[in-house]
Amino acid sequence: MSPASSEIFLPDGVFVANLTPLREDLSVDHPALAAHCRWLLEQGADGIALLGTTGEANSFGLRERIGLIESVLEAGIPGNRLMVGTGCCAFPDTAALTRFAVESGAGGILMLPPFYYKPVSDEGLFRYFSLVIGQVNDSRLRIYLYHFPKLTGVPFSTPLVERLVCEFPGVVVGMKDSGGDWGHMQEVCGRLPGFRLYAGTERYLADVLGIGGAGCISATTNATAALAADVFRRWRAGEDVRARQEKLSAIRQAFEAGGFVPVLKQLFARWRQEEGWLRMRPPQAPLPDAAISRIADELKALGFEHPEKLSF
Amino acid sequence: MSPASSEIFLPDGVFVANLTPLREDLSVDHPALAAHCRWLLEQGADGIALLGTTGEANSFGLRERIGLIESVLEAGIPGNRLMVGTGCCAFPDTAALTRFAVESGAGGILMLPPFYYKPVSDEGLFRYFSLVIGQVNDSRLRIYLYHFPKLTGVPFSTPLVERLVCEFPGVVVGMKDSGGDWGHMQEVCGRLPGFRLYAGTERYLADVLGIGGAGCISATTNATAALAADVFRRWRAGEDVRARQEKLSAIRQAFEAGGFVPVLKQLFARWRQEEGWLRMRPPQAPLPDAAISRIADELKALGFEHPEKLSF
Image 1 (cartoon, each protein chain N blue to C red):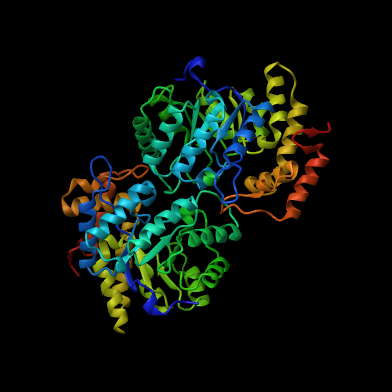
Image 2 (tube, chains in turn green, brown):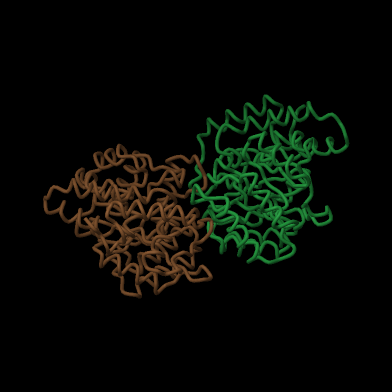
């Protein structure tokens, strides 16, 4: 049911659901975005999940998203390191964006379910994905289902995942599991050997690798990429990573004191001394400085003063 | 805080969140849509809520929605009877669609909050609406907030509604309250005299008129427009409408045995003997025939055989 590894197009390991830097008019700051992606790969990230939740994807229109994908690829970020979020509510939008991303060379597609109507039947969701896959109609298409029930209200049931994988082998190849439910990750990995499951948080990085998953895709790896990549490489080399994973998990947890978009952008504004990082699209709104200071203090207490300045 | 009635642009009474008929390729069947809107007004509906939840708005892309608005107005449906749904997740989309609807003559705008990110702060939502209103920048803009927490996961708190009404008097003028919570409707009407609240179901039609609300906007008025309009006109004339409202509420309830889009489309396919009504965009999917038959039987037992064939 799963494609041979040569057909995967995206590496295992640590992906970053990258932040989207904005200009004063809230349009995408393309050079700053490319620079951030480049820096993340230099930090050791295996890939970038462009236009995910943390990238504020759903706050951008279709043309803006197309322009964003285009600019990142033109800036030289390699397509085989890019998983691009394309899931909209309307199938023609999802199909158009997916087609563009695949034709531009993106190695993988991260696809939300249509997330307005709820509850919807598995049959309705199956029809939706069938329609999109049929409209994209490209042998290079590799879809990672984006399971994030807290935000979508539309979970992927395991029978639906199995049906999609069986019906579209080599096309529906994996999942980003942002449900935060370890039991769900175990169930999916157990029932679908070879299915490329990435945990939605680096907290489960070693655990998910241990059950045959592919790695993690996370908001906080914007800051923790180097640490998470270190855990991944040591795990691959057969080392005992428990202590390092615990440190990584504790640091991850320190970020969880507010919405990731404001928390991370406001922290990057401090770390980089760049006001521009404070910009975000509504409904995201900045948190009080005091809240950010508390998180920064907690991180410092864990030895994390700055993504490039660790003391442990 | 509320505009003079001459500045309202939309009538009180019964609005229909109209269904969107589709062609075989799932594109909008524009002539059938215009015919359905015309028929609803002939049935006595005071207005049409175009591109609402029941109209599958969020299953259409921006250009498709623009084409849909254009075609309905070109077909002669009067703009001062149209409340057009324009709320997307991305503010540039919402602003573009709203601007188009206002410039085309739509008397009111039904605006969902951005519904992907949650929880979001009232401050973030306030910034979102401020941005959209600023970008539309048209004195004819009249916004009805679309409160539908079960689908959006983003409720409008009463303090947020008050802040929007105070900040944008004559612009943020009302609400479609699809929360189904009578206490919420009472609170909003009580706190904001003159605020044009439409209940999201005809079940609360008489009740909401009784507390100063404007009427109802409902999925099921696709079928019950004549009955609901009769209740509205009698209520206005000072008659006792309790028995009629009870009948209307019972009929409404009979439709509540499944998602409104499939239930209503499948019933219209039977009533009109038109297969085309069976088409819906995924993730909507048809219900089993037996489920529709059960609803039809229950309606018949209530004297409702067909929207134009009542026996009571």
